[in-house]
Image 1 (tube, rainbow, N blue to C red):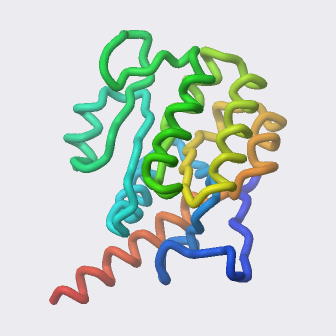
Image 2 (image 1 turned 30 degrees about the vertical axis):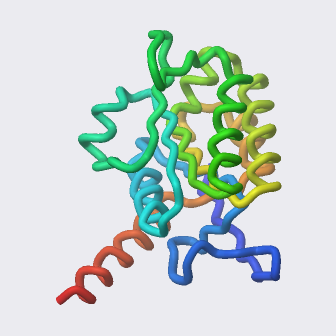
Length: 195
């Protein structure tokens, strides 16, 4: 199965890009499915969005302190998908309450913010595909009604073709290689501007 390219959008009064020149013309009120084996490009995009003064939330399968250290995310809240109880730890089988946590984050920031959900495959393992799909659709509907942004990295090899097609149906798909090139071009331009 080949990569699906992000669709071009004509900007209307209701559509608002976060910033001109942002990778792939990221829009507020949209959930993005980022196809990549490891979520490196998604984290880089998340960091670029944080530079736009958007509040950030990461939901991840990785240990929060490791994510902070390796990604340099000092200003973003990080929730760990884990069966271990604790502060900012979330049980992966409780996806109904996870949806409420994501909604509350967006509501607490006046409908804005960027969420990186790095752990879709883990949610599928713990809840089954259909229940996880319903969770994604619920969160997508909420994000569309507000000005939030959801980044949802997924490794296409971990899903059946039909499952991937169902996820792609209502999310905007970003091609990882093109997004990576766009981010690298942006970083080089930023370096050249400082010299």
